[in-house]
Length: 427
Image 1 (spheres, one colour):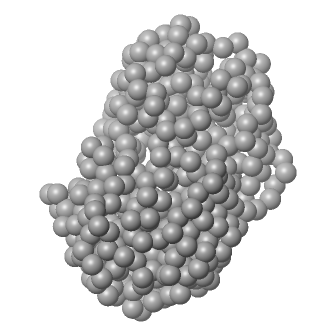
Image 2 (tube, helix red, strand yellow):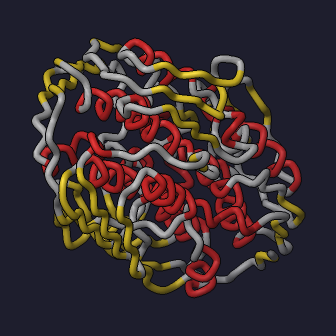
Image 3 (cartoon, one colour):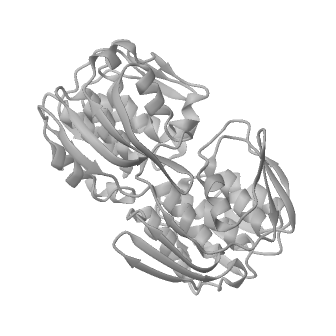
């Protein structure tokens, strides 16, 4: 895939359904009794992995374009899968489905591709084991996970790190456990699960930093609509802020505050971003966005991202690294050790590719530093099979002096199969 520099970006896009929300609605629909209908479901390969795994648990799954219908007799009636459950590249699939498997009266195995099988799962194994599940893992941490389910019991669990996946895993398991389950979250993470639970007739109690559910719970089937994926929107937002004379419109974008820390930071730094037509889909805030090129942003954007900001924008760091090349103060990212445990080691992936494109960058164990006011050259990008690296450095190609070549562009299908088509429509 060759990305050519462009002189402007103009046009309008409607984004695909949010990937994180799609996973959660599908899994909650599987736990509910009846037929759950979901519109604007993500077509990403990750979310398709979740649907395929649910189908192997005996659920009726029907898909038509962006519409998904899930027929279930409830979480008590899952069937023992006849083969391994394959999560592909989706860490969310493994971490959330492990909760369901831990409460099912059979032994099953779930795994992923080579990349996913190198990602740590001890963070969910620990609480699920405390609740009564038996889980075997490679080196006690990595997939495949062999899970023997049982009657779970509620626990009081303090999250050791900010992780929406771990939080959601424990809450889902708590719905199938005996008694009350409490999750304590010291640093807020994305809250899609909490927003969705009441629509499935779940009583969720929130007090200070604690979330409580009681089990065993009976979930009801519902109809839901999924907003556009903010993490997908970020690449177009950053592109519009960097390409002179750019003006783009993004429709029905999910702007949940637990996801949009980068958007808030951009607005506070003088970016030309306009929010219009605010509304809600199932307690998820949505709006349309207009984004234009902004000199003011390049001058005022903070020189460092660390601390409380990182959990809210962890997926946006690769795109932010591309923006950093043009910032008048440069950008230092610290406290991002978690970036090394994503689909690729994203600190290494960012540093290697910035250097491949002629950009100076300093690597830290927990982040990197990009000196100010640099020009991206042409060159070859190593995607490391990571969809967010591929999309971020496609944006770099738009403002480079020479074409940028991606070595493995098809990896974007993990989250955004239509990405290159949508990018082409604007340029």
